[in-house]
Image (tube, rainbow, N blue to C red; front, side, top):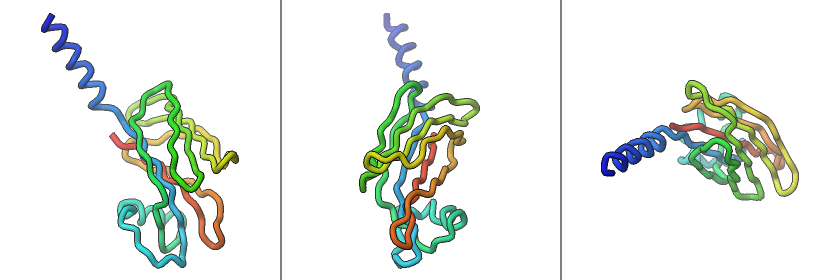
Length: 140
């Protein structure tokens, strides 16, 4: 009996140790904010290269451990929600079905492949001279 419990514990520990997680961030891109957000220190150079704005402010963040056949609702605040459904994983590349909504309006609905440790950036709606961005990161 002890042998079975030990084996079961090892199997469960192994399956949870290799679980990837998704991190979704709602970001405001601006040339006028004049505020450096320390929570975006890792992403700021990549965001600047991709979108060209000088300042980025994190408006919301949520993280979940990914499990197949489950849809996650990531509430990023400001009325923005991302629905994520993992489809498959091969060689540390995750295929996800994403839907980004604002209130009842669907902004983006797509299927993407993101390698672990990489980012996906999506440009959303404009707010005056600024833009709302979605940053998706897959972590091991």
